[in-house]
Amino acid sequence: MTTGTPPPTVPKRSRARTLVPLGIAAWLVLEIWLLTVVAGASSGLLVLLLLIGGLLLGGYVIKRAGRRAFRNLTETVRQQQSGGAEPASAGTSGGGEGNALIMLAGLLLIIPGFVSDALGLLLLVAPVRKSVSRLFERSLDKRMRAAVPGGFGDAFQQARIHYPDGKVVQGEVVRDDAAAYPPRDDLGPRPPLTP
Image (cartoon, rainbow, N blue to C red; front, side, top):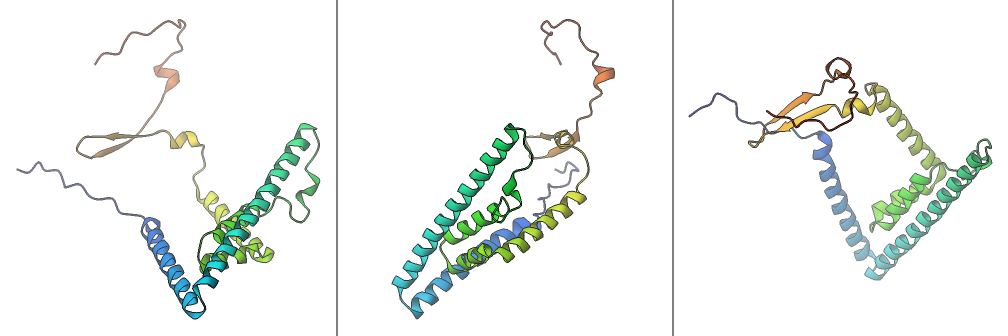
């Protein structure tokens, strides 16, 4: 028996949802392969010492960046409470710039593997960190320009109705508060809604 409705189609996966898991799997295979190659060329003890050294260095880098970020935050709050202008250390070397990338470098150093350690060490170099920061900034600026203007209120006006058979009906909530719902004078309880 046919009802005349087409069979439900499976939504197409985005490119990122397909490529990110494949990229992570390829990265893990590369890390394991490099660990075995280095362990075969030297010794397993040297690989273990390198991994422990990366763990300790990554922990130190994250701790130092976290302390710097907290110090900058408390200094900014203190300056704003006293009614002063911008903090003096914002333009000096090692100010608030790059703390997120330094923490990312520490995280990459903590993750066991030589590729992640190399990326973490690269992010610790100031010129590389500045170029990566500029790249992220340009990418974010490009996405913000492409975004439709409007607040988050528009995003929350979407409505979805899920039926038991799996169908989803998209809709948009349209409110005409002024005409349909005049302000009430009484603040008492409302009668229940009946179908």
